[in-house]
Amino acid sequence: MDPKKFGISSVPLKHAPYGPIVPEKLKGANKGKVAVVTGAARGIGRAISENLANSGANLAIIDLLPDPLQETKAICEKYGVTVKTYPCDVTDVERVRTVLKDIEQDLGPIEILVNNAGVSPGRPQWLESFEEFWRIIEINFKSHMLTTWAVLPGMRERKSGVIVNIASRAATVDFPFAIGYNSSKCAVTRATSTLQEELDLDELDIQTYALHPGGVATAMGSAELRPEILKKYPSLLQQTPDFKNLFKDPPELCGAVATYLATGKAKELRGMYIDCRQDLERIQAVGRDKLQQDNLYTLKMDFLEGYKNEP
Image (cartoon, rainbow, N blue to C red; front, side, top):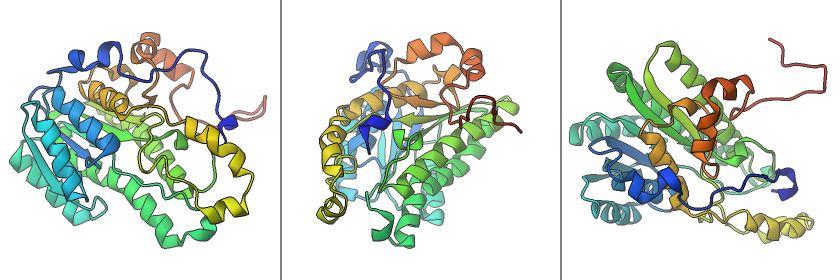
């Protein structure tokens, strides 16, 4: 990833919870709701789970790693909420459907879904089999859609709910060694906005969001490039220090933003791609009509002057 491909914000970005998303402001904001978080065993998923627990939500946390998942459970239970763990491969269709049914029997109707499970091996195409590539698509995209399809009938029946899909800056820019990751995050972002179009047509108070978690130095995000890759592409050595500087955000920031979105208070931004480092109140103050009119916070394709993306 070449940092020079990115712009530089003239408005300072947030790198810690602020204003409406500090723990004190979020405390009790989702009291009594049932929330599901995938990929909850560590990192961003754990931070999302803890913030939701602080907001009073009862939790169903899902991951393939049983021991770290129990650690997340213990952290969340300190907030006095009910927490259930469900070890699960999120790409296993029948297992996921069974788990979500079990959650509703154990905790009640699912009102909040946060799809966080994801992987990014960071391999070039020539070092990756098609099966390995497709596995990335299944974890990062199929799993999000699988859980969404499973919870939407209940949300539609109740005419309310919130779905937060963890996206990435990778949805918005090209960089090497991430064909599966970039493609899946782009797909998640587009699927989120398209689904919202349908939900709005049906006049349902169901909100979806594609949330970029910021630059978080998780085990996935801060992995070193393999020696054979650096040997083949020595120019990457010049980018590596700058690349590492991109990862300076705590997972708690994403956790707090996801929890705020779960409250339903950001309805004006539904269906949009949200960068958790940007001031939510500042964005919302612009108004949904203006954001949509200017084609902001959505994926788009630009052309030379005189050409438009005609139907």
